[in-house]
Amino acid sequence: MKIIYVISDATGETAERVIKAALSQFYDEEVKVCRLCQIHNEADVQKAISVAKDNPGMIAYTLVDPLLSQMVGRLAEEYNLFAVDLLSGLIYSLSRFLGATSHETPGLLHRIDTEYFKRMEAVNFTVTHDDGQQTIFLHKADLVLVGASRDALLAAANRKLTQARATVAVVWLLVFVCAWALAELAVRRPTARIVAAVKQFSEGDFGARIGAPYPRGEIGELMIELDQAFAVMQSQREVIQQLNADLEVRVIQRTAQLESANKELEAFGYTVSHDLRAPVRHVGGFARLAVERASALDEETRRYLHKIMQAAAHMGTLIDDMLELSRAGRAELRSRRVNLTALIDAVREQCLRDANGRNIAWDIGELPAVRGDAGLLRQVFINLIDNAVKYTGGVENAVIKIAAEDTGNDEVCISVRDNGAGFDMAYAGKLFGVFQRLHNEDRFPGTGIGLATVKRIVERHDGRVWGEGKVNEGAVFYVVLKKA
Image (cartoon, rainbow, N blue to C red):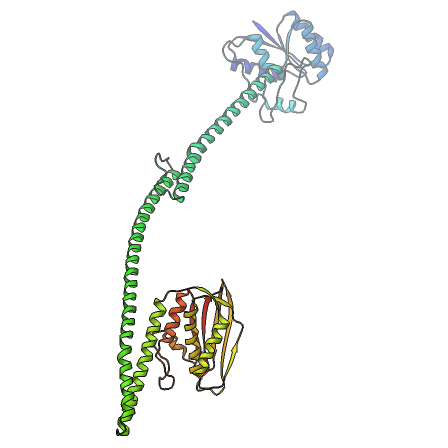
């Protein structure tokens, strides 16, 4: 029978109970436990060791005095006895002495004795042997006894730590690989396909598509929607192109029809005007001859003949103006540098001859050279200046001002201003219409064709013309032409 000697500075009952509890819980072999108690000095230690030496067995000691504890360990080693501090290596030593015959060596022994635990709590309960091989760990709530080699414990911990590090490294590597694969397959490649298709479509390749395969999830749905949108836009573009082509054809046809109609109308107007000139002259001439020869005619008859003569003269003037309007639209445009100062001076002299010696104040500013047809531009300013002279006929101190202003974009704006009868701006839209008049013909005679001729000539020069005025305060007409 194997013997375990319990050496204690107290009664040793608690240590005995601990050992018996461990034996009964973890081992099946019968073991005798002997207490060697009340060990208080070195002599007591010598006696206890002598007893154990005479009948060899395992020594389990629990001594508060560290010197006595070290003495027990030293003597046990000297006599080749198996000894262990009960608290630091009980379970491990039992395993070595008895062998784990029925159970594996335990790592945990629950609370054994409350009073013994409280007594041991007062001292340093973590004990390390001189050889540094055995350790014990104590928890406040439970008495935890671990009997293991420190080197073995550290080696096991290092192995576990190395395994843990390797595991973490492998896990991180797997996470990285999975993340890269997810980003590559689920995000980057589909995104690159989307960008390439959109770029092709924006550069004019309207047949571009992302195409299958479509990945699962929102990106796949986006790719499908984009392909559908591309298809819709392509079909709409084809419809728009067809509509534009049809519209261009219709515009060409309508333009040709309009040009043809305008040419026919101008030809008709020219022909009618030309053919009417001779009959009208005949009517006026014969009426004048009748007046000169019919001395016996009464006054009323003479008045009738004068009316015929006036109507014939007016008809002749109207025909001449219509021919002038027709020529303005049909004449070949010979564009060259035109000196406006010289042109305006010549026009002014011509208009003064028709002014019957009226006193008119002229204010003519510095005028630039423009580019256009000199003959047609002369007709423009003859009409504008003649109108200014005519509509200031009822003004005592007539003033006609001609000026020029640079508007930029290689254009110049020439203005002809007077302080005559003016006009109501509510009827400004009728100014440049054929046969449109805003004044009484008895007061201001005319045919209503002059401003229409002005507009046609200016537009042929890629210019603009408009008028502004106030009733009885005068009017101003603006003509925009290209600078030379």
